[in-house]
Every structure is written in C-alpha cells, then in structure tokens.
Image (cartoon, rainbow, N blue to C red; front, side, top):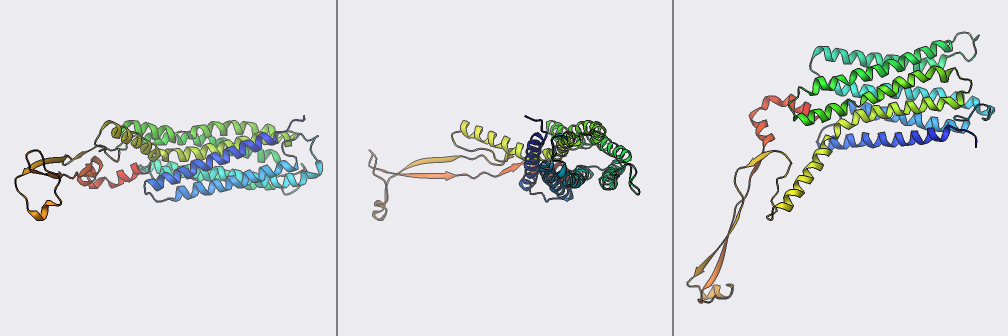
Length: 356
C-alpha cells in the first residue's frame, strides 16, 4: 500500500477542530454561569476558530487533488487546483494563529494595571499581527519560476515565514510569564491562584509547537516532494492553533470546578445530617439564627362540643392531646456578602477575580 499523509492529517484536523470548539464553548458557558457578559476577547477567539475551520475545510479538500501523496503517485493534472487552494488555506491558518493569540493578549489587557505591562502587551499584539499578516499576503506574490518578473523570490518568502513563525512562538513563551505577575497579586485563595496561573501558562505548549513548526518550514518548502511533506507542516499548524484556543479557554473553567466541588460538598452534608439541612453556595459564612423544629404536647382538661369532632382520640386519662409546633426560620449570610458590604471600594479587584 502506498504511503499517504492525507488520512493522518484529516483525522488530526477533525479531532483538533472538535476539541478546540468544545473548550471554547465551555468558556462561554462558564461565563454564562458567572453572569458575565461576553467581551471583545471572546468575540476575537470565536472569530479565530471560524478562520481555523475554513483552513481545515480547505486543507481536507486539497487531499482530493493529491495532497498527502508522493508527487510521482499523484495525478499531475490536479496540481493546478492544489496549488491554487493551498495558499488560500495557509492564509486563513496564519490569520487564525494571529487572531487567537490576540484574544489571549486582550484577556491579559483586562487584568494588568501597570503602564509598562500594558505597553508590552500592545507591542506584542501589534508585532504578532503585523508579521503574520505580512507573510500571509506575501505568499500570493511568490515567484513560480526563478526568472519571473515583478514577484518575490521564494527564499525571501520562506525566510519571512520562518521569522514570523519563530517570533510568534517566542511571544507565546513570553506571554506565559504575565499571568504569574498579574494573578499572584489578586486577593484569592492561594491554590486558586496557582490553578489559574498554571492554566493560563498552557500557552507554552503552543510556543513549543510553533518553534518546532518553524524549523520544518524550510525543509518542506524546498522539498521536491511537496505534496507528501506539506501535510506534516499543516498538522503542526493545526496543533498550534488548537493549543492556543485551549490555553485561552481553560482558565475560565473555574466555575465548573467550583460547581462540581459544591455538589460533592452538598451531597456529603446531606448524607451526614438526618435533618437534611446543607449549606448552599460552597462559600464560608455563618447563620444568624439556628434552625430547629420543636414539637410539644400539652394535655387539655376541657373542650367544647363544637371542637370535639376535630380532636384526636382521648388518652388513658380521658384527656385530649393537642400538638403545638414551633418553626424557626434561618437567615444565612455568606462571607462574600459581608466582605462586599464592608469593603465597597474593592469593586475593581472583585471584577478582576470574577473574570475566572
């Protein structure tokens, strides 16, 4: 059986597309649980996934025209269509990479407070998008033959492509340092800080993938058997985009983790207390009044004939028994409510913490 990189590329693309979509959807669902409005970073992330989807569809379609097969095994008559679609698909891929990283930077911009942090993030946002946009457009002007006039030499396009990919990967590594600087200063439980920092640092995976991808571009671009080697690069492109989407989505899963913890806590308390009274919300707090149901029995020496029909049977002493029940209600106040009432000036700090 002949070698074909098309099926592995297709399977990888489908899996990564579905996984990234599920993670992004969970991010939006968690924001709904927190009653948080969707912001610009959410819209940008959704837009990057749509670009990613277009790239995947075009790449899979290219397998019909020989992508994945060896040059000597493919139908040469289909190469014009392949060479027409490949640059278009790569355009959407490169823009998707830039836009997905932009979403993560916009999220960080909502957290940072220092001027130098904002300046550094805006610089990375501009340079990443500028380099990626340049290579995505420049590839359409690459010379098809060495002596073709009014075009850009292939070596220049390859060099710029390697630089853009390597720079984007390096910025992924730099961005992983920002969460530790920003999140650590928030007034949160230490283990929650560590969890958010680690989840927001998953962009390092995208950085490592991007570095390896940039090292493969020159070899594949200069390879005569480009139909067989190109899917390898495209697989790494898909992995980088998916890793970026996951890294931008997972930090927002905190409400799901908290809700699961609350359900476990509530179920444990319900099983351990026969009266079925469990503390809701999973947050530390105190009750202002204890809750009990007190049942008392008082003997009654006399009754009226009109009430006799509704009284229970008499006891051994020929006296009716009336049951009197006193019910006390419980007013529960959480610690967060007390903190909000006593510290109304912490609204900005609270908003930053509730982002996750």
